[in-house]
Each structure stands twice: as C-alpha cells, then as structure tokens.
Image (cartoon, rainbow, N blue to C red):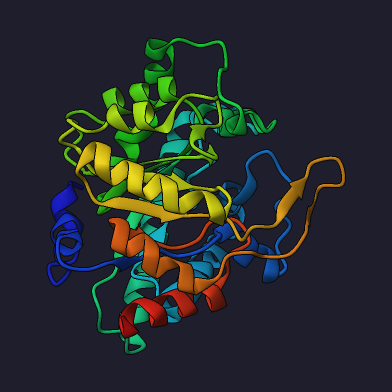
Length: 312
C-alpha cells in the first residue's frame, strides 16, 4: 500500500492548511481510560492494538464526532523494541503498526457513514525514543545517543507507518533538537509528509535548547508541512507558535495538554485545567493551522475548539 491509498474524496492535508485551520483530536489515552481501559503498561495505548483494537477505533470515532478533522494514531509508544519486550516478534509488530493507521481510517469511514461530511485525515504518530523507554525520559531528552543512532532507531518504524498510507506522519512530543534532526533525516524519501512538534518548557525544548534554533532545523525540510509544539502547558503555546511561524515560514501545529500537572510519584494528574478553547483564536492568528489537544484534553474540549474556529 502506498500513500496514494487515501480516500479519493479527501484533499491533501497540506493544501487544506493553506486556506484554513484544521482541528486535531485530543488525548487518545484519556479517552481510552474514560472508557474503562487500563493503560498502566509500558506499551500504554499501543497495548490495545493487540488486545482491544475495536476500543481504539471507538476512541478515534468519538473525536471525529466531536469535530476533529484529524485522528492521531495509537502508535506513539509502539516500537519494535517495546513490542519485543512483550514477546511480540518483528512481523507481528509491523502488522500492529500498520493496524494503528487502519483503525483510524475505519473510524473515519464510520464517521462518514454516520453523517460527517467534512474531510477527515489520519496522522500516524511516532513518539520519541524516550517513549519506548517508558521512564519519563521523553520529557528530558539527552538519552546519551547520537543523531545517527536515533535515526537508526526511528527509520524502520517510520517506514512501516508510511507504507500504511497515513495522510501525514506526526513526529511528536520531541524533547530534544538532536532527536528532531534524527527524525528529519529518518523521514526523507518516505513519500509521506510530516509535522514536527516539540514538547517544551517556556521558550526552550525540554532538553533546554532555544526553541528558535530547534524550529530552524525544519525550515528547509521539504517533507515537513508544519512545525510546532504539543504535550506542553497551554500558556507556552502562544510564544512558540509565533516563533515557529517566524523562523520556518511554515504552518504551525499546536496541541497542548489540559494544563493539569502529572504527579509521577502518585501516578495521577493534579491541579485544574487551564486550557480555554478561546485561546486558539490567538494561536490561529499567529500562524497555527493544526490545532487540538494532547493529554487530558477530551472530546468536549475538542468540540469547543471546533466551534470556536468555525465561528471565527
């Protein structure tokens, strides 16, 4: 299967971004947890690819029905190495990675059958190396690996995801400019566009590099259709959007967390949400064209984002 396998009625995502803002989904994990699924596992939502794939489809469908235009697949933490630790061989791991794209496609088909008439797209998620480690290091970066080693880690998984014909590859929650450089090398020649989004703290990557320097890596990457941030505090988005737009000249992607804080010791979320859907208008005006939510952002908030953008 090639990238030409997208449904013929769906326009190319990059072309859509030239004329309007596109709504991303929210946190897949919290939607699955709210449906009663236990994700306290090193594979996180990727475990359900093998055990409960229909649950993944239902979660995607909930976001499409709420107003999302793009579903981000459950492959964030799906890697050959992570699957191998669970006794899943390479052939089956390849099948599960491809399945993550097909499940999102199936949700789009079901949404259209249910009356949704707007274009719907699928973004194949590729999380950072630290997500495979499942120890929180995706929020720190600096794994002790060089760019070439990280490229060798990412390329095989990206090849499988690209062959499953998503509309775009979501290179997301990247904590480190070195890993971003590796990912940009790894997507070359795959024939599928990508977006690159960093996890940030203030005006720096999680690894501490200035955001302007990190964004600049993607400025001349033809494969990259959008650059931005995700899995960060809502208050960090506005400055990052303006910086990404200024440095790269590309559309910007922005999907922060709810604003609640993760307590690793208690393994629970703390605090109250600070993500107000009205914030998205400022992001859009600064150049954001792919806008949604990440952790703890559910269908209700995505519906509010979609209504806010539509009304504007």
